[in-house]
Length: 172
Image (cartoon, rainbow, N blue to C red):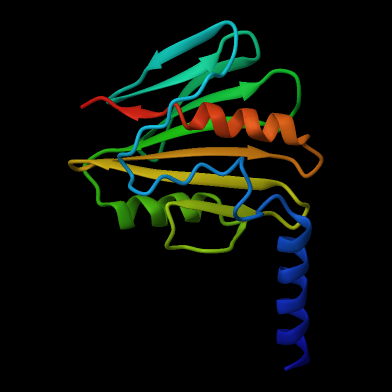
């Protein structure tokens, strides 16, 4: 019983000290998964046309990579001015939302997630790194837009990441 209580206390402490703070302005939480959010990201923006979506990324500060992981397309933009800061769009074709969500969570099992049912979901690693993700579905294709950053990331960069993610829009 003491071990369980201790584990619960540790998890609560991690969430208290982490970037998973609900209700703050850097969290993008539309009422429905197809809501559009319009935002200004900055100078040198580039609208990336993905397979069934668009997202606007500042060209100068982010490096683009494309890869496949277990059949899922991963398009990633790494922030060039700080390690371990990135935005990723993972595309799961011919799948249901619950299957894609489960696969994504298994791939990120080093994070402890607060809530598994919401639209914007936040997870924290024991070292304080934070991972947010949103799910979007059209037909039998599920898109998971995620952004992650280390514990010591400044609030303005966290807000920038959220602003970039809010430009994600389905095009099909």
